[in-house]
Image 1 (cartoon, rainbow, N blue to C red):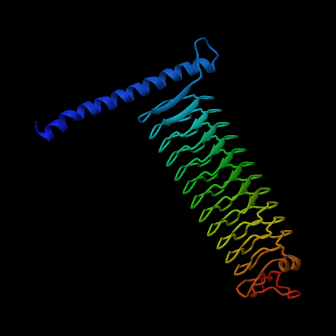
Image 2 (cartoon, rainbow, N blue to C red; image 1 turned 135 degrees about the vertical axis):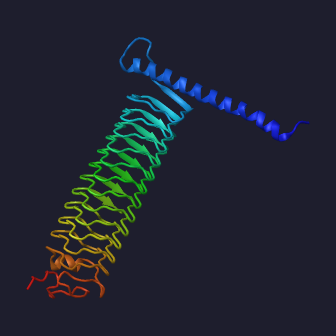
Image 3 (tube, rainbow, N blue to C red; image 1 turned 180 degrees about the vertical axis):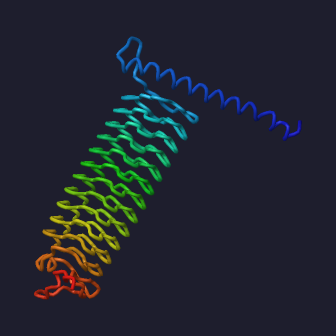
Length: 325
């Protein structure tokens, strides 16, 4: 027998050649499908809707990609550059978008399921009216992304950067935003159930008229957050910083604010029935009434609006902030 080391060296180029041939074949199949799809979109003779399955594209660099209404399954776009790509109305399943540059990409009205987007750049992307199920986006970038009226179920947005993103009238169920930066994001009219935001940065978020039912915000930053007219019932704000948050006319029934900071928060007309304010700092909280505080749970560790310690006692006047001087 020959030297095993020499046999291994001889065999490697063949394996590399086969891999290269496979990559070239995948690239050719993809580009042919793109051409036919372009004709189909333009309603030209000979066109065909793209239906691509199980292709591994190596660092694809494609300008002006348009796969609107295409069917994509098991495609790897990993580490590619797809600036401004259009996937409007596409059916996308089990595709890999790891570290793909999708700046300004359009996924509006697309149906996306069981896909991976770790480290992907989706800044300024459009996800309007899209449907996303079991999608993984850890450490993705969604700065300025448009997620208006989209639907998200069991999606992971952990450690994402999504400042100034828009989620107006979006629906989210059992999603995760742990340690994500959602500063200045807008959630007007959004409907969220069992969504988790532990240790997230939600400073200056606008969630007016939204519904966050049984959601978790433990240890999150919510300074200057706006939730006027929202329904936050049953949600957990344990150890959160809600300094100067706007909670007017907000349903906070059965919500927990244990050990939270609500310094200077506005609470006019808020429903505090069954709310847990034990250990909370309400010093300087504005527009609270005695009737509201009597509906909530306070204890000796609660700091009341006038700076005195709890629990709140009827006729104590502790619901009123102290005037300077």
